[in-house]
Image (cartoon, rainbow, N blue to C red):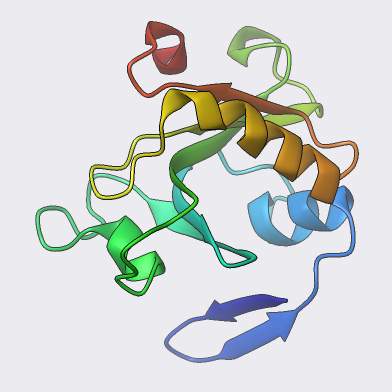
Length: 142
């Protein structure tokens, strides 16, 4: 199930395939282009919860991961992710991938679990290209 809430409306739906993920979640409604922003996420109890994040979102007020997890004591995976052009920013085209890390001060999973996260997401969204990095890896900044 997919659930979105704004000040004016609540919306529900279902993601049926990887195209739904790209068009319904990551595309700008007006330009129909992929939005290059950062999301914070948790995966817990068969649920993938995420929201757009950045410098101005809950900075120094609360743990975004704890909010997504409803303050659960344990979470399977947590961190940040962002879409990026599959062949690099200098060759931006319509092929995109999702880059995940384990950057969560509250629920940071160990580095060894990132391979499992990649496999999980690619299994649930066939055709999705997922790249994972430890949050300390300098390649993540590229």
